[in-house]
Image 1 (cartoon, rainbow over the protein chains, first blue to last red):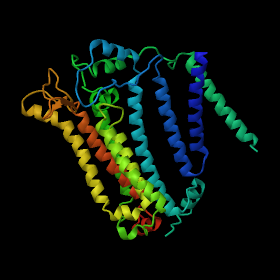
Image 2: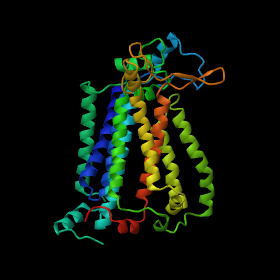
Image 3: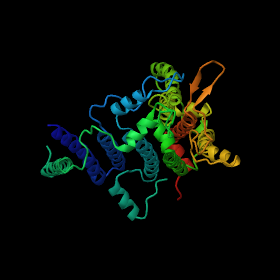
Image 4: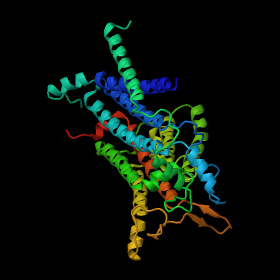
Length: 140
Length: 274
């Protein structure tokens, strides 16, 4: 039963990624391509987080109850019990990095998109390619 | 009514993903609800707040510690990628002048939306600064706080109009300078330890956080103020979080202002080479 549930998780995530790749390949509108690209990167991030799941772990990777005021650092037993109950921090770190890079790519692609629309008044790749073949119809 | 082609495509996508999921689980390629962690995660979790350990990071927040301390160089490169992306997006709009006279009439939304937004505008920067300054204690950090802050500028553009934002002095040059200041602070923190150590004739590492037995120059884990108790600042973590907050909030606000320019301004300014 547990195996089936995990199979289902992975299959749904792969389905999301495949639909996103299908959209990037097939949709002619470039704005829709970018939306699909962000869905693809989000699905990849969720896949990383799912892989970092730890059974019977109950706490996030943060030592609980510490504020700016230093009282005392955790004892040896507290550290051992924290290591035994916290989830895996490495996928979370990777996902934080991936989100920032994804945002940077998204920002750059959307500014290119605005300029393309300004020059050609269309985001349809079929129309764009025919316009470019005709020698570029500049709309001033 | 979906035609046969759509049906076949959907069916094939579902089949491929089901086969991939089945293969991953059956052949043991993907983890199924691990009971145990990999050794690296155990080292991170166990040493980060353990004062007797050599590798300690003096922060109860493991993720922030890994981002800025254990894998600090990685994050510096990530910040560089973000910096280059924002700079190249601005390069595409390099000839566009952003002045109060060419950014629309500045009418904005109705009185109801404006009044509610005025209340929210106090809350959003407060939350953003709180996320940033508590980045080494609770989940969050510089990037998260900076993105939260930039939501305030995006809301200001859409509720009070771009014209008001530009007329209040949020110019391109000012925001770029603030952003560069944040990035320079990150660079200063990264190079401070090896520089001071080499001046003293000792060993020091790039992006070094706390002092080590073999590299005794480091940032302090606690700072004692005039009051009796000392404050946990976790070495470089709080400084780097604040610097990243400044850089990200200014950079994202600048991008939102540039992307929301009206079309006639873009056409006047010209963007790409003809």
